[in-house]
Length: 562
Ligand SMILES: Nc1nc2c(c(=O)[nH]1)N[C@H]1C(S)=C(S)[C@@H](COP(=O)(O)O)O[C@H]1N2
Ligand SMILES: [Mo]
Image (tube, rainbow, N blue to C red; front, side, top):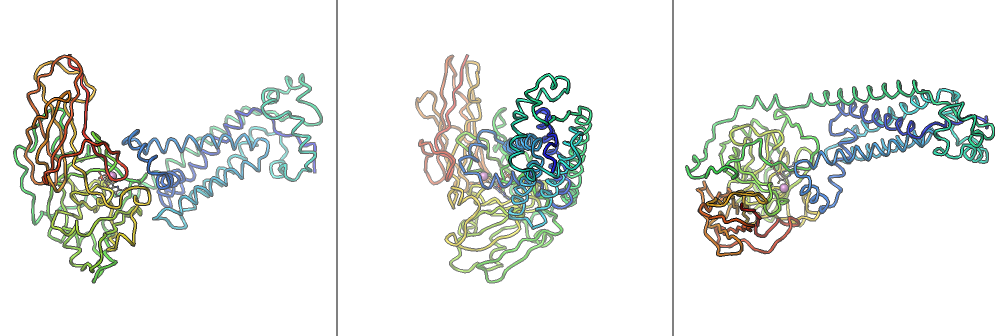
């Protein structure tokens, strides 16, 4: 054993950079392997998905409220940032103890692999992308360190400090005075020679080869980038947009009645009655949108039924289809929030399919599961009471967009999405609320989620400055399946005034309303709204946050009139 083996000195930044590049190689190669095996098993996606599932409801709520539609981007960026910091740290460790670098990267691989195989829709193979990526990263790190400090004897990296007698290791470390202390001195042999403190004993800090470092880093970046891009391209082969484009929508046996003429007040700034698909809010737990091929899609209906059923997409298209205008709302929608949208859905009546299966007495819950393992628990009586609960295949005259559940999703008027609107639905188990739990229930949300009566002011915009004079106050109100009977508005806590209601096709959509003769006087004004539903109940003034069963309270805005 050579006790006098020189140890790599050199700057911490260089080592950190190498760690960063090795980390990038690990992720790039991991992505490549995921592209071949399963895009959802990409290390970052697997960790991200697990973070989404494991994080407490309050944190998720905060993320949705704070980052809105960007919450996934923020999560992925956050994970990448943490990984970058850790990778840099691993590089710094590896400079002194190369074995630690390898161990650190492999540990990361194990974390990624564990996250990937514990996804609800994963198999054992899903561990591979993270493990392969980590191995590639560990190999890259060793190579990079060798290029950067080429004077290290070939055996050094394998001989690691572990095999040195403890005493000499301690001496060696002391003689270098710690990495930070010697960082600059060792970069230049001449300068180092003038600093005997650093040069004490027979340990000679290794020279940092800048060219080796640069070419190594460049090579690593190229490999990481190429791996990442190739992985994405390979994963794209699963893209079902071509299959989606091929779907020919059948003519509905029961088309929706044309929308009443007065359904949309057509005021600029007011939410249109029908939300275009591209503007429709999107809420789900998935980081990679599931790509479900309609040719292989099936829906199993089983559990407490007399005759279990398995439907193909072709079976579904052959059924008598119907259209319904239904407003979806997310339970995470805070008072005045944006997570609500209205569409015309085309689909098969869920109740008819369930009747064919024959629901056994005692069953009170439909536990629906998506292709990626998310679940919703829907009360049986709600779906069977005659309302337009659908297995939907189209949205606003277009085949269901992939991000909204292609090829098939559930739509149940009157229930928040988390207990009813399963996208990419593949399985419905007829069961009992006291025997099964859906995804959000153990995460602090109510097992049942009827939509609360709510209203929102769209116009004028809260916080805006408007001109004095006659001004329209307008918005939307909703109480799905109960309908909206009245909307009232008051300014500066004055008298409540009845708003004029737009037409609606039925009780399952939101309803536009307007007060079109407010005389706005200069100054600051508060505008409040409250709705009364078809059962005669007026929405409560008592504020409730979204968790656990939906926000409540009056939407109130402040405007400045000039
Ligand atoms: N597979 C799956 N379906 C899901 C979800 C999900 O996370 N995964 N989220 C639900 C929630 S919380 C809502 S509010 C609606 C939103 O539907 P949208 O994204 O089409 O607007 O989808 C529901 N269906
Ligand atoms: Mo939701």
